[in-house]
Length: 257
Image (cartoon, rainbow, N blue to C red):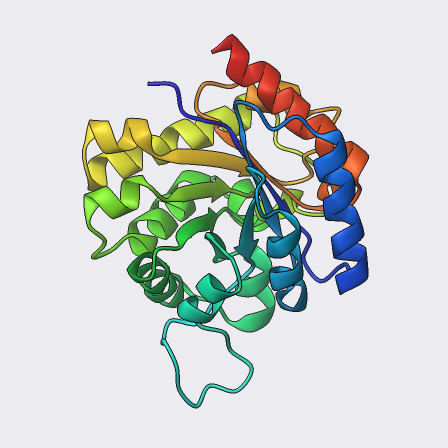
């Protein structure tokens, strides 16, 4: 089956509300979204304004995190129902920066995945190894553990509709990028792990992105790999021109498949 390329721009802790609105208007005015899926991941305060700005377009909105409870005395947290009301259809879960700085674990990723699915949000589940783990030859071991943990107790139909993002931690924000061949090898391995958890049909359906210093210059070679179904873009998603160039690369790849 031909999986639709999904290009998500993770703005991290960048862009005020006016900046987010201006970017979104520029993107809508300059990008061709045909044949691919485009997702913007603004900081929490800009979610609703960006969702309003993309209303009536194919662009979707994602939050960068959520909490696993629906409500309660959890100061500083945001729930899946709140994100739905703010216009989100996706949510990034388990990003390496959440794991590194905020104590995210395989267990909390699993709880968040279940919360997202329970409320109709599509999780973009991030997995990836640190540099020391890569140098120790543990890449496959690490991503296998993270995938198995993230989807523990999740039904096949729901899991197959999720998105997995392979983001080698050593490549995030560093300018270093996995070669297309290396990224393909890990994404193919992840698909095999997913198929072992569920079924070959589910593995064929699930979309697996690559993330980690994706740029207009390297996007086409990465996205052309058979098991790379899109990109989770960091720095290059902060400027409309570079993000549009990556979307264009995805459209060309999608057309060729």
